[in-house]
Image (cartoon, rainbow over all chains, first blue to last red; front, top):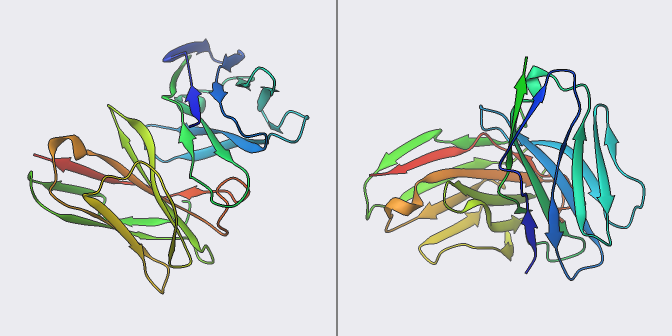
Amino acid sequence: AQTVTQSQPEMSVQEAETVTLSCTYDTSESDYYLFWYKQPPSRQMILVIRQEAYKQQNATENRFSVNFQKAAKSFSLKISDSQLGDAAMYFCAYTKRGGGADGLTFGKGTHLIIQP
Amino acid sequence: DSGVTQTPKHLITATGQRVTLRCSPRSGDLSVYWYQQSLDQGLQFLIQYYNGEERAKGNILERFSAQQFPDLHSELNLSSLELGDSALYFCASSVGPAGGLHEQFFGPGTRLTVL
């Protein structure tokens, strides 16, 4: 079974600085998707960024980018120019590609604190 | 607002009871997923329905069941409730059956408290 590990329960960064959240995963599949979700205090789950494993190019969405290392099974999220609104729980998630989707497998999350 | 609605927002009940959580997917979405978020287990996938049929099962207990109706709304039934069932239950929807290819949009969740 696939697993997703986030080794940083909490991270803190100064406003306007850059922070990187780590995620590793384990799967026997060769084709899959990886995601970062944000959960602010409102508890709403918001998709931040998505990476398709067969694409070598790292995904980017404005201030958010990923470093996808398929061989190492690593998928880190970099947030540039951190803003107060970025404060939230961040979850790394995985799902396999293809039929019979199993839903998303989530890591335990990283609590990101933005210091003004 | 994701377009996915869940009712009720909060539910307080006693051990041994049965409750039903309801989810309406975004307009046009055929797939519905249920997730449980608890302090102990984190976020867990429970079950997926696509166009009325069960598509995939995750860590769903036998005391829990779900269905998707012809109008595509879904209900999650939790019975013989235990203290450990207290959690935030999310519904998500997507246009197609593949949970990675098609983005999943999450509802605001139902907070269940079992006393």
